[in-house]
Length: 225
Image (tube, rainbow, N blue to C red):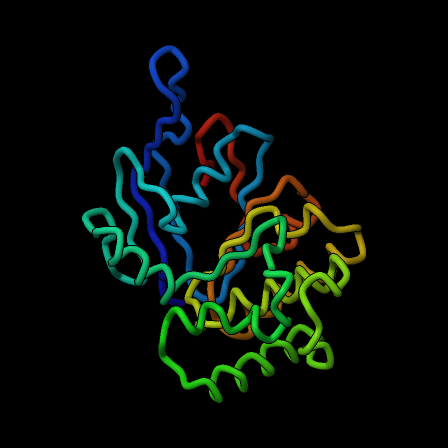
C-alpha cells in the first residue's frame, strides 16, 4: 500500500502568555491508502487540533506535513486550498448541509469548486454517490427534510465528491444514536477499503475505534504509535 500522508515532529501551541498550551508534541504519523485509522483520547488531548493540521485548515508551529508526496509547509493559502480540494474530504460531527439545497445539490458543491466536471457529469457523479450511501431515491429532498442519520450519510457522499485520497472525520457519529452510528461508521470503513482512500477518524468512542485497522491513543498532545 502507498503512503498518502506523513507527518514528522509536528508541534502546535495554542493561546498566549500564561495561557499558552503545548497542544501537539512531536507528532509522527503515517497513513496508507485503503486503511482506516482512529485517533482516540479524552477531551483536550489534542485530537481535533491534529485533525485540523492534517486537513490543512491550520499550520503547525514546527514539523512537516507531506500530503500525496507534496510538502505543504511553504505553500501559500491558495495552493493549500487547491491541495485540500483535490486530495481531502471532510466529515464532521454536524453535517453542515445547506438546508435550502437538495441532497444532490449539496453533494455537488465540492465538485463545483474543483471545476473538473461538466454540470451533467457532476449530476451523474452525485447520483452515484447517493446510491453508494443508500439515498438515491431522496436526491430531490432538501437538507432539512432528512433524518439525522440520513443527513450524515449525505455528508459522507459530499466528502467523497472529489475522489479524495484521504477522508478525515471529526467525531462523525457523535451526534447519532447507536444504530445510526454503527451504520455511518460501517459506510465510512467500507468505502475506504473499497475505494482505496485512507480514512482517519477522531473519536471518543473507543468501541467504534477498535473496528479500525489502526488505533492511535492520544494523551496531552502526544500521539502513541
